Length: 198
Image 1 (cartoon, rainbow, N blue to C red):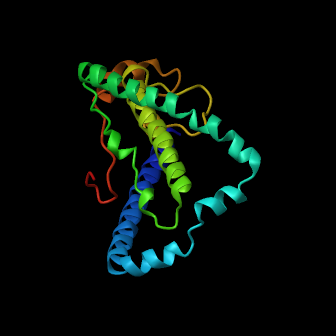
Image 2: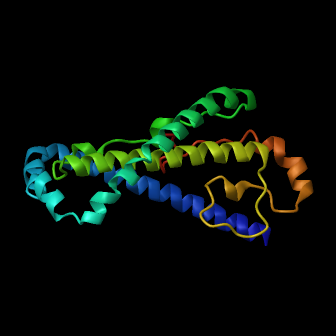
Image 3: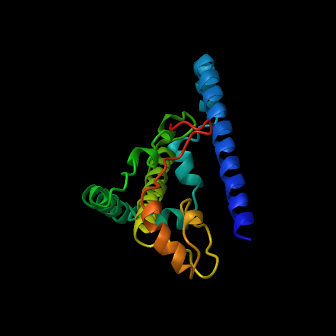
């Protein structure tokens, strides 16, 4: 059964790499077309922009009233970002774990979209930051777990991180003892689908 699971995991990884390659080709094609049609595209996209006043008038009152609650999330996101960056800066060199590149997870590119008004751009900035910090934190935590406790849980967990399939089976003490040092050195970087690091 173990070999069948390993085979499926290898196929999934190959498909993920293939998918990343397709995404990369699509992004490159989009960038090429965007460069060719930049002015026309911006003009077309601006037609879909909702003015700030109209946007606020069309918003439900309860949506507007909950905005302070949503935006209060800046504080924990900033604190988490600061802590995770400090944590990996101090600890990862000691454990010989490669540092996570923050810029791979926190990306701000939607502000350039001409069809977004000021509030929509700010919301996109906020969501990019919040989800980016969450993804960045998850990768730092996953690398930490790979170092300290790379053991699968007894029951299936939802949305396990990408490193989890390489962990040792629950209760397999022999594999854990024999393979822990090896696994602690396997922090391969994600590839772009062609086997090359981005």
